[in-house]
Image 1 (tube, rainbow, N blue to C red):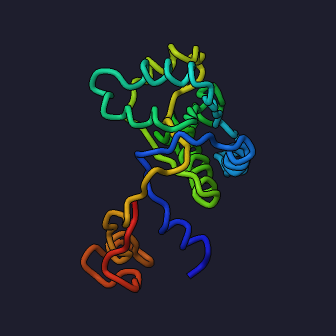
Image 2 (cartoon, helix red, strand yellow; image 1 turned 45 degrees about the horizontal axis):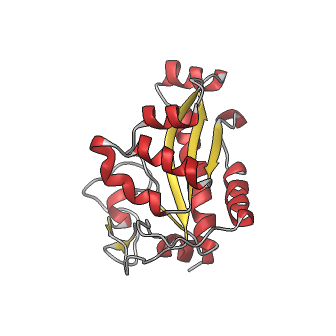
Length: 198
């Protein structure tokens, strides 16, 4: 196996963090990895707000993780929370949405976010891709302009604990086919029936 696939397999969603500060250069390396991600027509809609000021982070968490979103409060343990935004006022985003029915800005943000998370994993940092939060609360806490969609939050820190193994993933044969769709036919070769993941 390649170092990349080993890194992907070792990554876990971390929900318990140490209070140890994260070095700014490590966050910058993760941002650089995200910056280099491809995007539709090279529109580069992704923006990142790094919140490491303790007071602001507390206010962000209070606004983001209230009511039905309180199960996400664990993110407040992390010394850094990265808010991932996507610009919505780019022509290619409008064309993708109206002509093809595709939210290119969300696809682009997903790619960039995964770059960020994999770089963090390589640097020994824990992360968790979070979509369950009050976007209205985040917008209010950080005064995010309306031209940006708040896509996700990524808490970043040193793990206090790591799940010993990932959850079960479907086999390659269940998710990939060669030269057509054959749900019950022979599909992609796979070394094992199930592979570990998040």
